[in-house]
Image (cartoon, rainbow, N blue to C red; front, side, top):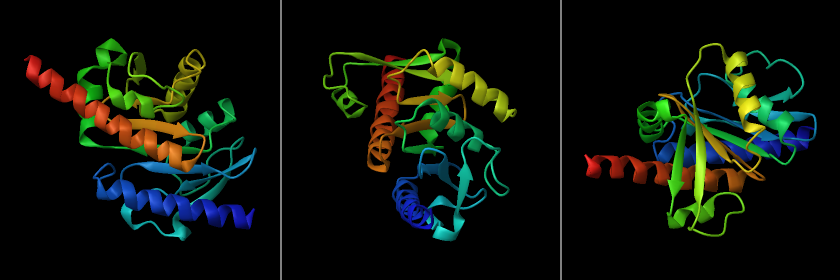
Length: 203
């Protein structure tokens, strides 16, 4: 367990620096996690600038138990993904300007439909731009366990989904490795920007 935690902590610290440089996690926002084994995961401590993470800021947790002291309240959202999707190895939550704005503007639609973009090929096992990918949008809720249950119920009907948005809040995405989760994050941040710019042009 100690070796797995040290390896996961290194990956989380590196991704924190990578995403912070792109301003995807301003101030102390966002949280990241990485599966350790079938029963355990590692998650970032609450209240830390993600560009300044150290390995001491990474906490181990039991995915079947309540989040440990010091972890974000939003850890529940990570735990549901690990419980519901055994293939998920990493979860990244960002608070970029575009994810907050676009999710707020489109929350009445309850989803964001992305069509025709070449960058859709970066998501999951998709291999063509000639498709439409739906990203669900959930209303923000300070009752995180209730929000996590709602997200879990909805995602059960969307087995191929690799991300969702919380309105006015940010993006959650995941992958079968930290590298895939990071790829999904970068691709989706660009795709969200395309959609926001398109809305400006159409106005």
